[in-house]
Image (cartoon, rainbow, N blue to C red; front, side, top):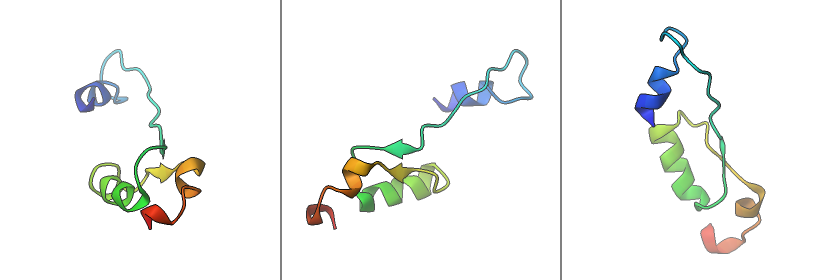
Length: 58
């Protein structure tokens, strides 16, 4: 995926724009926080189903 995104940079010839999907629906919030900080520059956010999951993930 990273190679594909690098090929889409505006400086690359014949580049195509991309959009990062920032909302996740599967990880517990503490795990998402680690993944988001390590790989996504803290841009990854929790979906409503994750936020309403209850105290099992807190």
